[in-house]
Length: 283
Ligand code: GLU
Image (cartoon, rainbow, N blue to C red):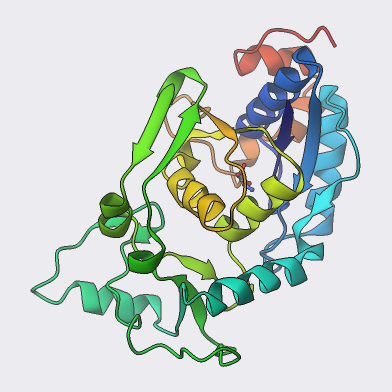
C-alpha cells in the first residue's frame, strides 16, 4: 500500500488537512506500506515557501513521518507539458481563450440550460470546433481543454471509505453531459490540478488516494485521464470534511483552525487526533 498527503502551500494546514494526513499515514503504517508527501505548488501566484516550511513543521509535530523524497509539482512542469503534447497529438485537446465572462455569456443565452459539473459551469463547447488544431500551434495565451466528446469512455473506480463506499461507474454519456470539456492546462500555469494529480499519483505509485469529500466529484475526471493515459487507477477514500461549529467547511484561510494556532495554544498531537475523531497515535 502506498498512500500520500498532497497539500498546496497556499495557507496554513488546518484540522481538515490533519485529518487527511493522519488517515493516509496511519493506513500505510498499519499495512506496512509507504506514506509519501507531495507539495502541490503549481499555482505559483499563491504558493509561498514559508507555507511549505510550515507544512513540514506541522507534519513532524503531528508525529507523521513520510517515506522518500518530497515530490514538488513545480519541478515537474516539463512532464505535464510532454503529456499535454501527447494528448494534443491524439486530437484530444483544443485551445480556448474564452474568459470566464465569455463562458457565462454563452451559457446565459436563452437556448442553453445552466448546469454545473465538478469544475463549476459546464463549458458550452464554444471553442471546440474553432480552436487552433495543428500540432505545434498551441496558443501561448490559451487554456487547453479536453475534448470530452472524443475522450469520454465508460469508467469505474473503487471507493473504500464509508461516505461513498462501493464501486462507482460513470458512463461515457454522463461524462459528456455532466463533466464536459474540462481545462487540462490553465493559461497561467501550463497545467491543471486534474492533470498534475493524475500524473503524480502514477509517478509516486500511489495505490490508495485519501482526501476530502470535496474532491469526490473530480475523481471521475482523474479516472478518465488514467484510462486515457493507460495509468493504473488507485482505490479512493474520500473522507468527510471537518466543519466548524456552524457546519461550515473549513477553508485554508480559516486561520482560527490552523494547526499552528492549536500548537501555540498548547494542544498536543493527540489532542488534534481526538479533535478530528481519530484514535491517539500508537506509532
Ligand atoms: N492539493 C489539494 C489540496 O490542497 C489536495 C489534492 C488531492 O489530495 O488530490 O487540498
